[in-house]
Amino acid sequence: MRNMEAFEEYAAKILAKLYENFPRKTVIDFLALSGGGEIDEYGNLPPEAELVKETAEWLAREGYIEIESRLECGFGGARLTALGLAALNAVPKSLSGKTPLGKRIVTAVKGGAKETACTLVRVFTAEAVKMLLGG
Image (cartoon, rainbow, N blue to C red; front, side, top):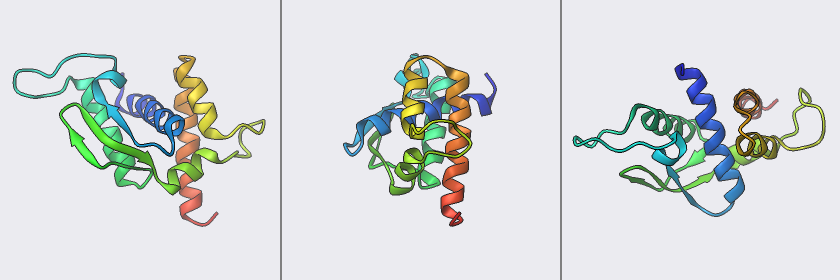
């Protein structure tokens, strides 16, 4: 899997989890979201779990999610920020219907519609940027 595809897939899984649990804080488990694996004897995550970690770090750094603590295999106290929630509650004109983006991502992730989830993450990012720019 290419990095951008992996980013979109894992961002969809992270955002769906946080959207469903909002406003409660939750744990982002790198191993569970990447499909499993184990930490090696040197304390390194499997490559796919490392991509989940880096995706979550990017989402936090860009202001979409907040993270309270770092765990061995995840982040604790994770929750959507106001920006992340606003973008997920948006109903972009580019999508037909009136279902918020967050609900669409949750449905795509739960239904195993990886391509749809990845497309929705691109829409999410565009909506968040528009909000940041006042558009």
